[in-house]
Length: 102
Image (cartoon, rainbow, N blue to C red; front, side, top):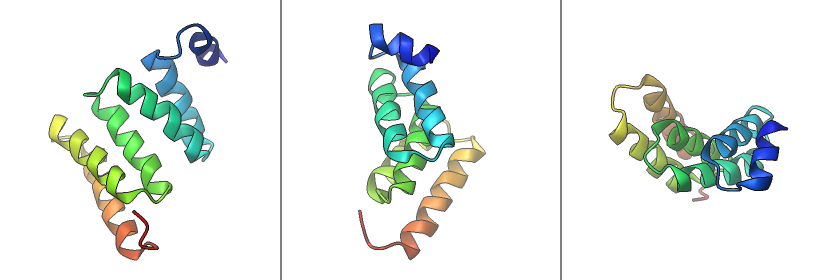
């Protein structure tokens, strides 16, 4: 609710968009999470945490090409973060057994 209040006055607030994106991610409402995380990414395009979480959401939505691109961008920014490596592995695994959707 606090993040929603912030967005009512500043819809581009990165922290509020990230918080709501993560809330919807945890609730497995990936389509809503994607919108909030994409908005957070527009406001802070070089934030590896935003990129990695956006990649995860896109992976769950079977948008493998953009998921991989965002995860690789996160990896380029923070090459030592193990969670990003895990994201890239999971995308590759799901893509390999997926429905062929991009």
